[in-house]
Length: 128
Image (cartoon, rainbow, N blue to C red; front, top):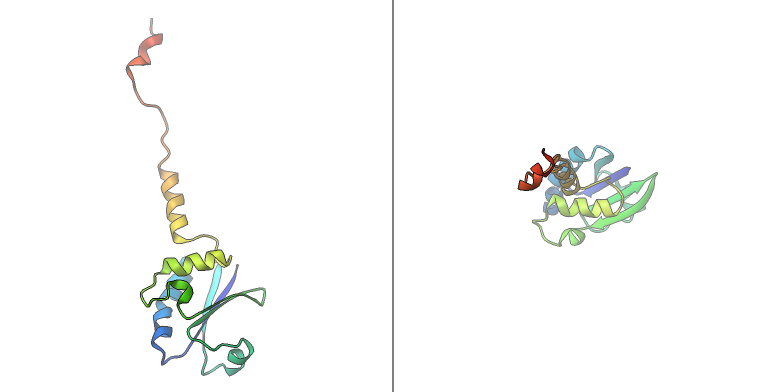
């Protein structure tokens, strides 16, 4: 699919808050590569990609930037955002094939199929 790069600073609290979300999403979506870059150790990328606000998550496909998320604005703007919000954003950016909720709904639908019929008093109308 592509890749998502989390640009972070080791001393920024909000960057540290993003890490567990990225780890969880990487485990849930092996079709997408997730990685992180320390901005202090990578000034070339920071300048080249014009990284100003942290944390920044940049989505790439075939080496091209397809979407940029700066701060937590697109994830609800609060510190207590969930993986679901990031997943929805990444799905809309075509970075993941389906969200956890979509997978859950698909599995639920698969199990809810009922084979057979409901018994009724009219069943015996064809008996001799």
